[in-house]
Amino acid sequence: MAESEPGTPSASVPTTPGTPAPLFPSLRVDSLSYDRERKSMPRCKCLPVSAPGWAQPHTCFTDFPAPTDVSLARKIGAEFIGTFILIFAATAGPIVNEKYDHAETLIGNAACAGLAVMVVILSTGHISGAHLNPSLTIAFAALRHFPWVQVPAYIAAQVAGSICASFALKGAFHPFLSGGVTVPSVDTAQAFALEFIITFNLLFVVTAVATDTRAVGELAGIAVGATVMLNILIAGPSSGGSMNPVRTLGPAIAAGNYTKLWIYFVAPTLGALVGATTYAAVKLSEPPTPTTQVMSFRR
Image (cartoon, one colour):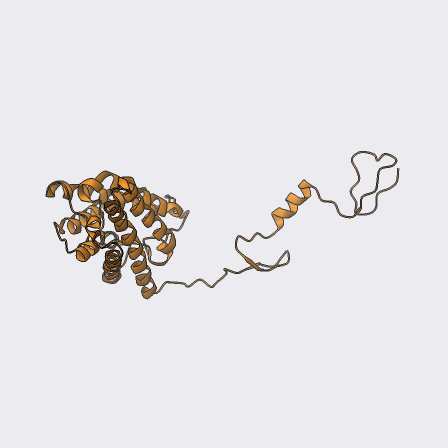
């Protein structure tokens, strides 16, 4: 039997006469050796700019120096844009439903608001926390999850975003803006109770995913968006399913309809305070070492 060349692993079975020699005898690639080498290779989940050596760090196109903190101006800008997107989408659903003979249905209206909340949280949560709601901002400040000094600026940005989105809808769908105004179809006490309860539900979930290290913070957008959708399916036909003072204020100003406006200021704020406080009371004590760091809602 002919001896194998140096560097070539010995065959497990003897070769037979007439077997052709390998084209590159010094190179051997099989699934096991490839798996071992692949595990030791640096992995890049972004667009690579340079090919590094084995012991050198890789460089990615998206590698930018992260700031230690986000300026208040950037937070306010993100809140304005996020609230604009939310109010535009959540109000457009009922308007389209009215204009096109209930084409959206209740499920479509709920999906518009829930999906808008989800995408805004996922896109701006790391900048401003994606509050989008004065009641949420006040509740988090009351529980010391957010600085009181930034509350007026956040609420001003949310109100401005809501008004701008509502007048944009007025220009696009005039004269059907009235369909996007949250006006109760039940008596005052029932509308107040519904808005209180659904905002309680919302802030209970938000406080869980935003402040508890055991909650899956990466899924905050999905959890909060699903809660908004569920609440609108429950209370949409009765109270409008606002849960948010600026969800009602902007369309009311654009349409000139201020029917029972106070309900949508007082009930969501009280519900938010009680919901956030309730979760803070029932949640488990903090572990010695936090498992995850959640930055949404608490910027």
